[in-house]
Image (cartoon, rainbow, N blue to C red; front, top):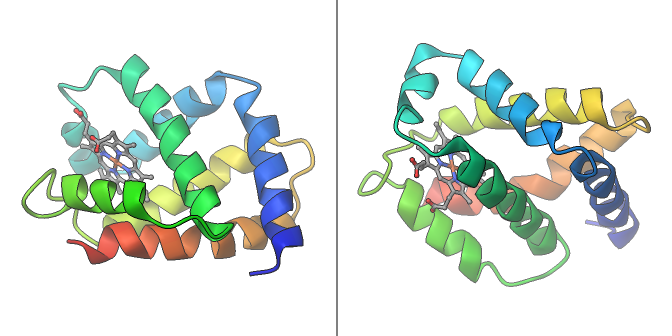
Length: 132
Ligand code: HEM
């Protein structure tokens, strides 16, 4: 992936993170997408979870920029069938919820920016999902 593209994604993420409601909105959407997904966060401290996800998305972007995936491998482990048991088909829902939230929060959102986001995040998501 071109580094100009990952730069644009990195900057877009910076604009999103300026508003802490970004992560509130994300989890509202993601959990609203199915009762099964909502149920997985029933005992979760969401304030802490939002904080952890902020870092997790940063790890996905850094991976697109060439950082080795060791932190992502740990997420692969925790999300695998021996951990939270996150089925591989749930990651599409996750990414769609994220992109809806970026569209709402980034004033510079465009369709080309959205496809740069999806391309940037895909290898890191595959790493986590592939550990299932
Ligand atoms: C690539 C996309 C994803 C990223 C970057 C991500 C990131 C994270 C991070 C950083 C944590 C906390 C660290 C840990 O417990 O290992 C976490 C926990 C968790 N994630 Fe994900 N996640 C992703 C996809 C999903 C999906 C699709 C689900 C499906 C529902 C999910 C469900 C959970 C659950 C249930 C927890 C534990 C919550 C708790 O501690 O109660 N994640 N995730």
